[in-house]
Image 1 (tube, one colour):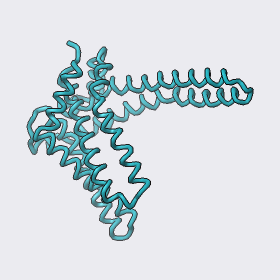
Image 2 (cartoon, helix red, strand yellow; image 1 turned 90 degrees about the vertical axis):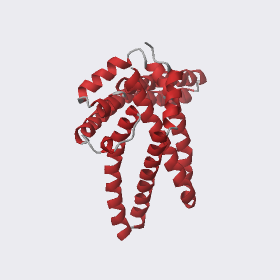
Image 3 (tube, one colour; image 1 turned 60 degrees about the horizontal axis):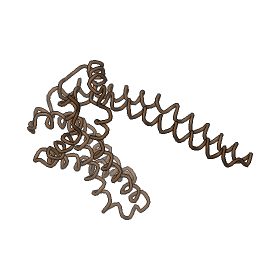
Length: 250
């Protein structure tokens, strides 16, 4: 049965706005604030930096527990302590392995895109040197098309492997078993998976300009940082919920 992207997005919205979803967003919000606070303490230096290092380490551990527990809570629809404390180490190591494998595929996929960009710039430069507007335009369009093709391949690789993450956390699958299952289950469903991830992309696009404002105007960070934290927390929970839906439906 084909994945119903519309129904999936509606289900994600219902889960994210449920009591469990809102509590997870609150937890990730606090985690983001701790990370932001520790980064500021490093800039201050001295005893504040030492405290920041401890807070940063504690936040990293909490982040691991929260990531795995969130997948489990969103899968069962229940929020229980053992979801965040039991059987954490092996799933975490496998999740790290899955992320490494996915990153390798993405990097390999980006190599052609990088080469294409260099060749396009070079070709366009030749066109300008020769005074050929047509050559410059043709090379630019060709480079753009080939670059888009490379990015499509990157998206294809990510979508092929992404369901390994919730499978490892929820089903306790082994690394390569989960990766193989992800490739098999996503076959023929990648376009619908991509459409289902559009809300995640839109939320992420909201985070970028807000982060840019914080970087350009540090004096506004007191107001902007909590906004970044809540947007990042919401994006994370929407992403995790969508991945859990993939794991349940594919």
